[in-house]
Image (cartoon, rainbow, N blue to C red; front, side, top):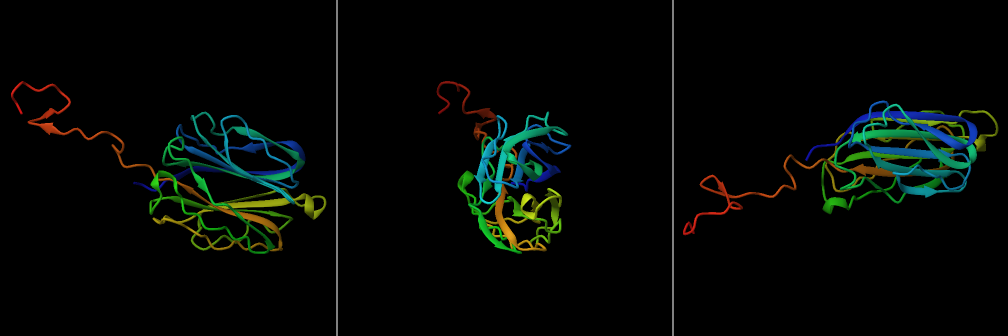
Length: 243
């Protein structure tokens, strides 16, 4: 197996209230990549993703936090998607990741943690897809929080790669704004992962998650093993009397 790699990322700062959030996708997206969007709106109300996207979760109160994934066809690079929501400002982060075919083994999310503090703390994730166990997963730590904290936050220990943060600005009341942040862990072969906490400048209501993208199988994995006798595949008819 091989650790998945981040192809590219994108952020969207939704500083104007809208019921149709236009979210940037990464500039480089290859066919077969796993696209992941993490989205928070500054008001509760279900998020609606375009066709072809599969939601991990969609959680409200006081803000709405959701994430979804899609297997890329290669046409998405540098484009946008529109997520419907209760009219509000928003913040989004998007990743394109090369690894396992997500249609075969989809990426996985933890249940999610929540609280009101200056330390959004993602919960533990033990991926079960593909038989589970220790593998070369790509791990992401994600957090979304209400308010106008300094952006970016301080990321969890070991989550030093592909750090991305977005926010809705500081206009209007504090409760009309939100922040999101995502980072990738340095490569870790493990059966589970529980990131440390983010650190933000001001306590408020937050949600935090851990994601895993499955590693690509080794070359030839899943192909039938063809045994040979004298260089001839068993599947080929053999002369009478050979056995």
